[in-house]
Length: 62
Image 1 (cartoon, one colour):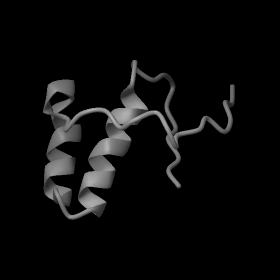
Image 2 (cartoon, helix red, strand yellow; image 1 turned 135 degrees about the vertical axis):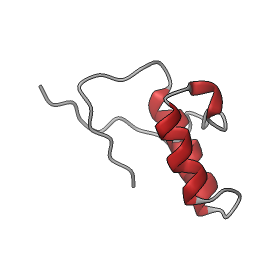
Image 3 (cartoon, helix red, strand yellow; image 1 turned 90 degrees about the horizontal axis):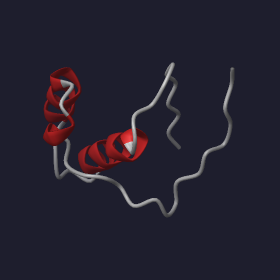
Image 4 (cartoon, helix red, strand yellow; image 1 turned 90 degrees about the vertical axis):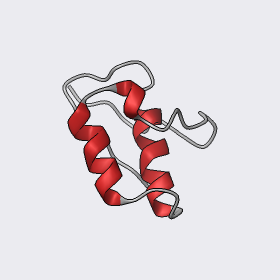
């Protein structure tokens, strides 16, 4: 289970984050690569978008 907290999200941002984290978990990428992707603040550095199936918005807090 993943939880993301932010003031705002970009289009497909959570799906991109999930894809990058899952790749690390599968051993197809490493933590250092994930950190560099996040530090770059450049969407083109991300490995792609996770499929929407299986992802569920549980709550929104204001």
